Length: 322
Ligand SMILES: *Cc1c(COP(=O)(O)O)cnc(C)c1O
Image (cartoon, rainbow, N blue to C red; front, top):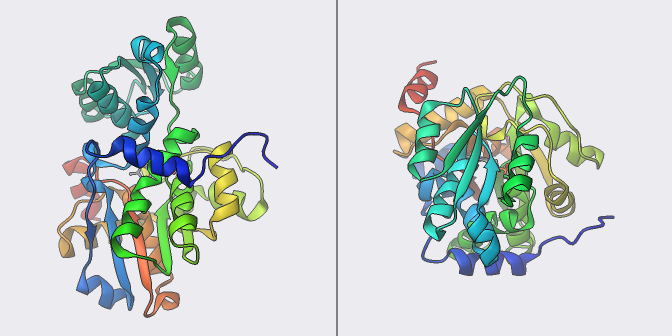
């Protein structure tokens, strides 16, 4: 039983109308080589071609579009060192809303610069001695800012569900769909679209092997908390699912699978060499999960969501060289 109201597919449709003409309608890539390798027909929804390089723009723009005039004037605050920060910063810039992003003092310079480049104010904190949520909440309280969390928010997850909506509209029903899983915003939004548009599709979340809290939560029926996992999938280093995201995942998803860092590197190299597309390690979770169970996919129509492509060239080369 949940004591709060869960978003529905109608919220995904409303989000799709809000982001239309602002977010990119990303391509669905196919590859004969990949189909031969998997023995199935694969459809790759490529959010590495989304604005700011990841699906996070969808949820961020949807959430900020719903602000009242007072909220718009006061501004938004988010805590993130990754794609959510950039999604919020870019959405705020487009909508003319002041944005404050709380980032760790040792966040990659490129990410800090990208966030500042979108006009956001960056507040740094010491990740070993300070609590970013507390800082975010204090800023929200002192300055009347609205805090938008990276995944556990109805407008954020409804926005993320628009990627799968586009996928089903473009290719029709699928037998399987594989989706990267961190805190569950993408997977829960995808689940709303899947149950509305392809009710028989088997839907899997895929998370890093080193941080299988989502799998343990799904299989045990209550949210499991873990320490920050050590994995190259930095977009999925979450410690637990959210209340909204878990309630939907529990109800609408078929299972949660895992992929190792080595699987992610193989998928990243495949995308680069055979499909000429750059995918960040977290973005490779879906394909890695699908290839791990390819025996079960023979002759099926299989969707994969590639969630993002933001990786420094130096880091990409270092991972590819291993
Ligand atoms: C945030 C992110 C994820 C995980 O999304 P959740 O909504 O937290 O599950 C996966 N891939 C990329 C590229 C991300 O930025």
